[in-house]
Amino acid sequence: MTDKTGKARKPMAQAKRAQHKLAIKATLAGVVLVLLYTALISSADAITKFVSGNFAAPQLYVLSGTLVASFCLGAEWLKNGSGVMDAVRTTRPWDMAVRAMATVVASVCYFYAFKLLEFSEVFVFIGLMPIFAGLMTGPILREKVSLAVWFALGAGFVGVVCLFPDGVHAISLGHLIAFGATASGTLSMVMARRIGQFESNALAQVFWPNVVLAAVMAVALPFVYRPMALHDLAWIAAYAAFLFFARWVLVIALRLLAAYVVTPLMNLQFVWMVIIGALIFGETTSANVFLGSAIVIGSGLYLIYDQLALGGVVRSRAARSRGFEPVPAMARADKPATPAE
Image (cartoon, rainbow, N blue to C red; front, side):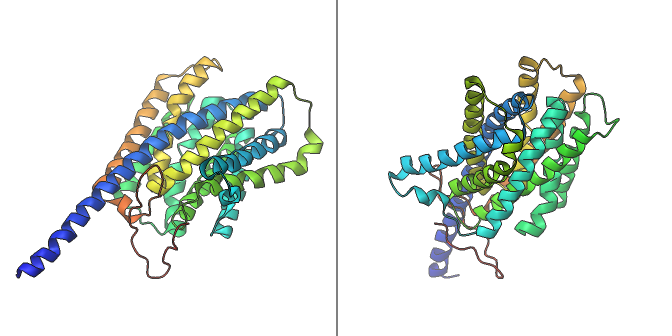
């Protein structure tokens, strides 16, 4: 072996080590962002349950959707000082349309699920999201999910079953609606990751679903509108703020982590469920809920290990966000990724 060859291999090895370090940093950043997301979205969900007792879904979503879309434009203006329309630019309009419609369905389903079920029961269905994500990852993202990951997802499902306070003894309309919310919500997140593989404009992924949500709900608003007091408007404004930051954070996290890793981590919302349910809604949490939470969280931690150990994050495109440089994606011969804006 010549010196020339040895010299050529040394920079290559250094580049691989540097790439691996970037992959680990991106994964850890993704985990932190998902944890932040769980706190934000749990707060928004608590407000949803509170508002659903007095108002219909269109009234909440027309106002909140408009506010969140306005926050996107405002964030772009604060970032660049001009050119706020950059916040709405997307190179994947059809993918964005699918994400937007899935968001509309999920939002409406979650609204009525919170109205019909206990706060803790709705969160039980969120535990199904890793299963849906695993099923959707292959056809939509072309990301291979290993057998070990499927075992972890199965363990997470067992944990979800444990989380039913009274056991799975009856299927009601509320449960079916919550199931639909989980399926459509997972589709929205998987599409967010798909879009994130081709572009880095996270604000667009928050802007368009909320514009579509507000527009669709505006059609039904005249039939269900009720006068609102100032404190009701304040609750909806708070809901919009929590939702804006939660979805923005989630879009970035989905570019740093695989969808089947993000969704188990989102089950940490159960921790917030216990706290919020007890303090605000007077709900008690039984031992089986804590057992199920431990199983779900354990499966999520295993998937993080799988992502770090097997270099799953290296196979994905990471965002140019929060100071992290993008992690090179595996080239696909049939459909190469376009440069992010």
